[in-house]
Amino acid sequence: MNSFDILRRPIVTEKSTNLQEQDRYSFEVTPGASKLQIKDAVEEAFSVEVLRVNTMNVKGKQKRFGPRQTARRSWKKAMVTLAPGHSIAIFEGV
Image 1 (cartoon, rainbow, N blue to C red):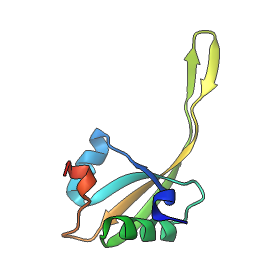
Image 2: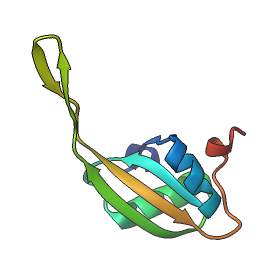
Image 3: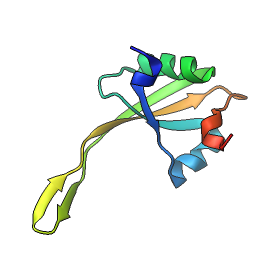
């Protein structure tokens, strides 16, 4: 698997932006990816050193569109902690 097959997209929210001060970055990842695969993918894609990976499965929310009720898809989130002195440029607007 390619590293960009595992990392689907970065998560940019107010909370994840505040966590960047602590060298923590959020990504949506492939649901079947392990922590070791996520670590290798981030290190390969961004040339950084990863200290820790935390993952969580996010359940899709129920939404209503008029009389119909639908569900958003469930997905997997990874919180990646980098070594001090490392950063990922795409989050900093460079």
